[in-house]
Amino acid sequence: VLSILATMARTYAVLACAWTASALAPTRRVHSRTRGRTAPQLTMHDYDYDVVIVGCGVGGHGAALHARSQGLSTAVLSGGDVGGTCVNRGCVPSKALLAASGRVREMGDAAHLEAMGVTLPGGVTYDRAGVAAHAEQLVNKVRGGLEGSLGRLGVELIPKFGVYKEPHVLDVGGGETVTAQDIILAPGSVPFVPPGVEIDGETVYTSDEGLKLEHVPEYCAIIGSGIIGLEFADVYTALGAECTLIEALPKLMPAFDREVAKVAERLLLANRGVDYRTAVFASKVTPGILGEKPVVIEMIDAETKEHVETLEVDTCMVATGRVPNTKKLGLEEAGIETPRGFVQVDEYMRVLDAPGGAVVPNLYCIGDANGIQMLAHTASTQGVSAIENICGRAHVVDHESIPAACFTHPEVAQVGLDEEAAAARAAEEGFELGKAVSHFRANSKALAEGEGDGIAKVLFNKDTEQILGVHIIGIHAADLIQECANAKAAGTTVRQLAFTTHTHPTLSEVIDGAFKECVGMHSH
Image (cartoon, rainbow, N blue to C red; front, side):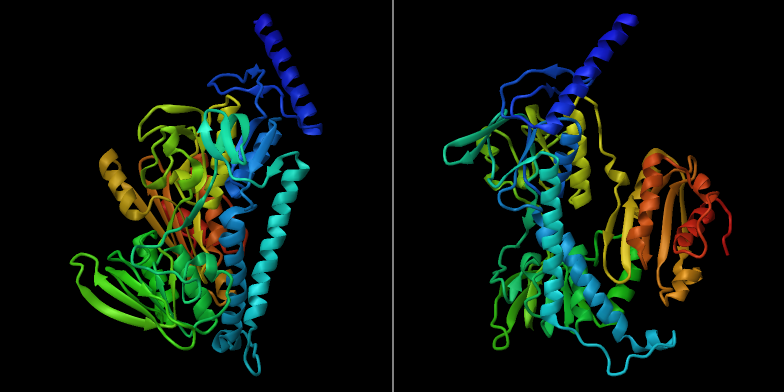
């Protein structure tokens, strides 16, 4: 025992020295932790870095930060796109547009304001260019902060794109290569444009162009009723546009729990005059000319493929999801299969050479490119997990406990299984499914804000009292879901949660009420 302890002490002393030296003056040839499923080991190598990350979005950034915290010499191949989709063309600018347009909606709701004794003589106006500038300034600020954090921690940021050649080797163009003990692929994703849809970037466009807010159309069709489509419908209607949603599936908002989707349909669509078509494909979309010629959308039945309608609009936004940005990685040429562009990985984020295939040595893939869960914060979590596994500490991401949110007004958020999936699991595993629903209209803080619409629903295993899923639509749902996600991840039971104390009066009491209902208690 004493011998083992002595060995461990020497090992951690070496680790501490390696971390200190690397943190103060990162070098290209340092000690590296090799992958294993036991205690970390140190080996010498002649590679340029311990870790090289291809892609500098939220996932690549998260991986790089954790790599440096573990003392690994790290480089990020940004491809000239520091911040990736989230910062430049996704989460960050969309939240800026939603924040500004949300103010317009709230201040323009005379009845809502008058109920609180507030009037706004002359109404509210907005400056489109000013709203767009707000989004652009936020992007620049967040991107600068992200780049600065990498530099301060000693991450070498290389503005080139890496093409995988073989284990440990990336081609960065111009006859140059970069080598590393371990490589993490984090190239992100790009908007999916269905066949028959012609993008001109002005009258027919994706979220990439839409987030620039170069114009606000009078009448816009949005293809897709997922999170991106709903958020843009929220922005456009707040700024005075009319919207029509076109959904290929039989039901709107397919990513939402059905009960929540029905509430969302009333609050986000019906109350705002947004109409929709379901079970139809936009088989052909022809761009127009702003102010002169309409966009023409030809729709066919999703099953029969027969023409059902032709719609003419000012603009058309394509929000039909995203596809992995993996075409230029060189994986297929290296003998690594990528079905539909998705990189196959195991639970440790290690790349597989085919679905269910063999592990590719020292190669990992995180974020949208592996398709497990296409969320920015999931990418960051997977990046941390990959580094943990590189360091020899086996780590598996609990994807079912990662929350997701739609930042409409009101917001929609969820974690875990929806009711349909929870019922299927209960039938398969032989337990009784429990369900409890709490309403915002019974919450003092929500009523004080004039925001009594919405529900919180908890699904749980009645036998074990473990949380299966939580679904919320209402004011600040995206913030409220985090308590539920943390509880689910920690294995906290609904009974334990029912006996915790929530601050009064706060919106968190909506969740408190649902947890109490789970175990037969009452909060009202």
